[in-house]
Image (cartoon, rainbow, N blue to C red; front, side, top):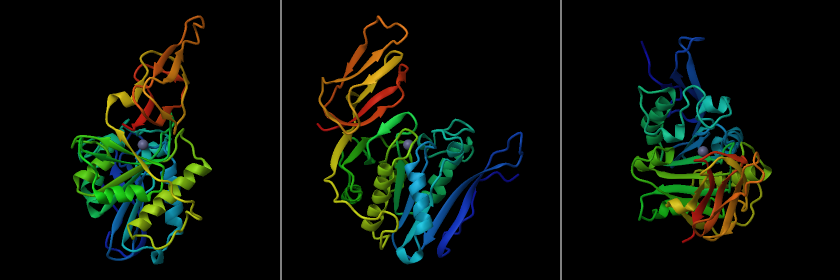
Length: 334
Ligand SMILES: [Zn+2]
């Protein structure tokens, strides 16, 4: 019996094409069921090529929305080279408006390089790693904080500890036009799409564009501008099609993401009062949050302080916390 993942788009076909990646997933309701993941491609000729990924996590909406807007607006006259777009890569998670797949619980952006004989999420990752990522020069992966976290708009990439990023990656991250970029130190086994793209020797960048399982006018605008800024920087887009009037680009501050002191985790259950907001600059020793027991109001709160100097990149949105929940993440400035 045929079991493999298949994609319907012919990568050599010129112009705009749309199709689906089909992942077999036999279930009670439908023995020959397929998970169908939509994708779209514009092939305007030889030249630079980019892969744009939305919804590696299913409750992060800026990427899926803006990539959908872009593919509906762009024409082959606007493009040099080729663009492949997966607006809703983890389609089972998007359908369930969840971070992880509703079919197998898989976190797609922790599943690379995947396995062709594994769970549906493993199979999606393996197909992307083996069949899709290698066809492109650049991979741009769109994220946000998801339902439970607020995240400042920023670019990101991964790098080996103790090493700088290369000039081309730095230029692409600067081109986004966002106030912050954070550089995530990882080993060679990173299970993310960016990690996989780096292993394949690609220019690999990403962004965090909002959070709360929500969209705002500003988060959409930031995402539209970052997308088209990068495409124009790489010479793939000849003119803007969705991002409209441009505000002056801020100077981008590069931040580290490389040590435990940048994070605050809950160590007991309770209800969290945050004392800082995303985008704030904070210092080591500065109070960060208090955790109350609202069911024992006579108990004094437990206060946590920041353990490093940095910029608040993300904070938990849900007031109720459990041990192990990440409450704040900083980008380090020292
Ligand atoms: Zn994400």
